[in-house]
Length: 341
Image (cartoon, rainbow, N blue to C red; front, side):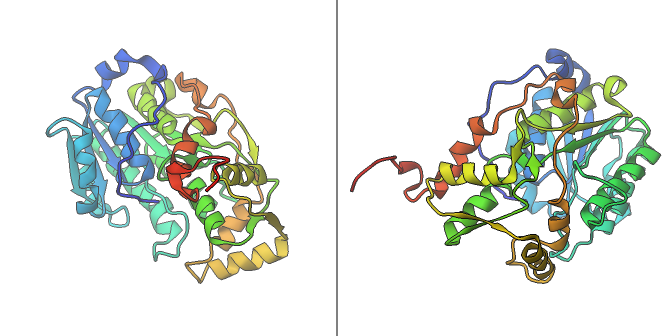
């Protein structure tokens, strides 16, 4: 999910996220630690925090890969430090003098050698422990809709375990559970657009499962609002979704329309999809793991109040995604509908 490229533009007007100028007053000159800040959501969060005047310390495993964040703030405003949630001592050192913190660290699968338990459960516990020891006044744990201690999917179980670890150490923490997050570097719309370019037929697994895609900038602004006002948002859990709920097959059909593809969709039977997931546990080029197949059996829809609690009007998928999906068209941004020769 990490793409080291800043995409500027196509950003909707700022909403009314919890306080406007007052937010700047509360976080200005405060030290906010962002653990896992070089990923997809992290780059947008760092930019939103920089607007508030906060001092930002970004904790990442690879400092060199996070240098692209530096220009998002004023000179000296953003500090990049090394830390690994699977090595608690490195995290504790990053929290010296911290006022507030966010944990963004998570993995989609275990094919890269990292384990769900180590990163999303024990890792979250390490971050929360360091934050508690530092006495942070506000903390946000970014989890996911579907976090469930009883789930058959390791991803969902460890997301739930991470929530428990955080709230045990920091009862005033805010838990945010986004639905699938979209934006220029996402691994949702981009993944299926790329598959549509590569495959002769576009497979659809669990086509009736419902999603409520949420814009990455809206999620970042919700995090900032929660940090800005822990008295209102602390100790609570919020699920975040966009303005519209879609069946999975309808999202795929929409993507095909945006990239001007005439390829046919085909629904994959559950038995074949289950076998595909098992193959994906072993082979990195298979686009789905068994855990992801399990997660696809449940809707991914946010419960209210969602973004409205933070004073944010959710951004429609259709307002943002076409601008970054056009590169999948045959002639990219130079594609012209109905052009002849």
